[in-house]
Length: 326
Image (tube, rainbow, N blue to C red):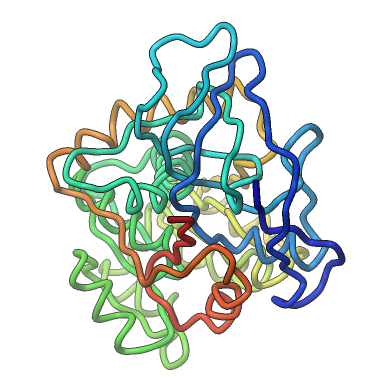
């Protein structure tokens, strides 16, 4: 088969479409013939040499894919050869075939084709696990999403609105904020021109955000705490703004607030399977009913992954970038 390899870390040109050995479905796994994969910022970090796959994972980038099952490993039940699926991966999505633990599979939702489903696993699992399973967003509360026009942001807006929450977003342009508003965002903040702390305070009559989903890390740490409501929850899922910040514990105590920081890739199989099961229970009915949809900016041939990475780093897209094998 062919896959995108990274012979040496570097810029987008470091991604090479090359012939590699076929994977084999081990015990508890299925083999998926990949129709599409999706691009995530973690893939960019891996390409640069800053985010190695966990032990035993595929060395090729790609944290999610969609396709058709072509082989079933020992001990797998509930799936059959020919099933159209999408999957959460620890790596290997930028390839023609990938072996996937059965607990990380999801069916293609009704109303979506198999290609579109590639945009779902990482964002739905990230949003549901952080915003709902950890931060426990409730109806009537306010969620602040940094990077509202990203793949994760566009899904977070829709899921929060589906459960009856109010949604604030930050984004860097009027066009991106317009797209967020179309998805249901209530409070639109241009981080290049406005102070999100002040905007959240004004929009909530001084209360603040009950939950913040943050992809920036250190750069926003202090301001995020300022923007939190009493008993607020800050969920950190990225480090685009740095890895080390100064924490004002006094401010955190005064608000009786909590901070969590999680990633999906290195979690044990059992934890990933539990998250995928929760997503299938709570998110898939919304997808099947058409209440939630993936936002896809564009599709590119998988062999052109370098161009997709350039687009990702330029941050001009809205939603997901897909890589197509067919």
